[in-house]
Image 1 (cartoon, rainbow, N blue to C red):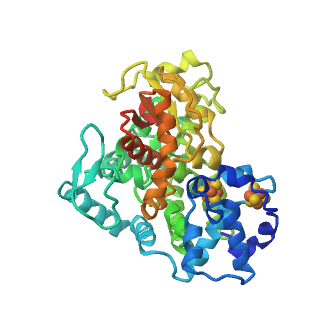
Image 2 (image 1 turned 60 degrees about the horizontal axis):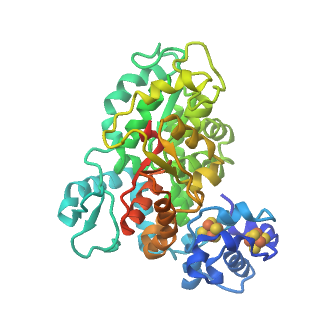
Image 3 (image 1 turned 135 degrees about the vertical axis):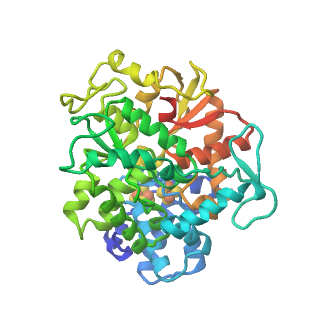
Length: 457
Ligand code: SF4
Ligand code: SF4
């Protein structure tokens, strides 16, 4: 990834027009120049010129960003503000100026053994420290706890993590994905597209049912799916705090985990992980392993993108309808039924009114907007667009932990927007957004269910 000094030319491209200010969610709440995208670019410029140092205030301002990418999208001069902010955070990390909470979250998720053990223990004792909030699938703390705001709706940790629950499936299917090991023993057939599923931390530790729904839907769409068990965190939390060395190690580990299998596609149901696997892996390892990283990243598809564009669901013609693929091809009526019949959740009423929130890392990070909407349409529910579907939910990774009040202030507009649609269900395609939106809706007393698009299928 580029260092801050490598952005000096790009920073000079900023003409201080302020277009980015009007779309910046942190500026809209704080209303201070340093909270805006333009302000942060100016701070980085001053730092590079030696006019200011890595002070606590500099760090605070640089961390007041949810990395939503709205500034980058609106900038007429092609200034990649989030990349500049990440490079500044790298500088901050290098000089040991990162606050403890941000580093702790990144280290916990990045260290497989310690992270798994700590989160497993937490899942066993969470009922002691947290009480269940009636009618909501979340928890509130019972007494003061470090890093946990008293108003926060905390998601319940899974008793059995996703990567534990798919053990048998992976063991039995794995052989079919390794070159020269013979045909697929169970799922699909020799010509089924082979998909590797990347879970990510939130699906693994908190929402394993989203992972399960994803596997079922992929198989219903006629593909074979495997979950490499030695996969790790995607590294986005480490990138967010500027710990590039840790992110590189995680990227390499994931690369090796998926390279063991002969895969047509690698998919994930997490928008942030998808952005990381497609784009940030290239930034991290593209220079060292260009061919391997290109081969890997070019196979990555968000699950909605995979289902619609590659497996022909949602009424789009398939891009590569090889002989033997099951349940694929163009024509909505022909292909819609297999997935619709797989509805298993008993808390989804048929003909519900659904609205959709665009995760920043999917809509802006990957340019995917139509595909999730196609799938919602295909699910048979009614759909109503909210006023600002692409507005950030305010999560911003560990930003939500270190700047909780600000994060929820950004979220308030999103929650109101959802409420105003009158929707029964707010669907999205990112487990992080699900967590954040649930908290926001709970705060304004709205009972709208929040779920991943694949759960509707
Ligand atoms: S990425 Fe989003 S929050 Fe950060 S400066 Fe840009 S618009 Fe503002
Ligand atoms: S929109 Fe671009 S050029 Fe204008 S102030 Fe923001 S970063 Fe600078």
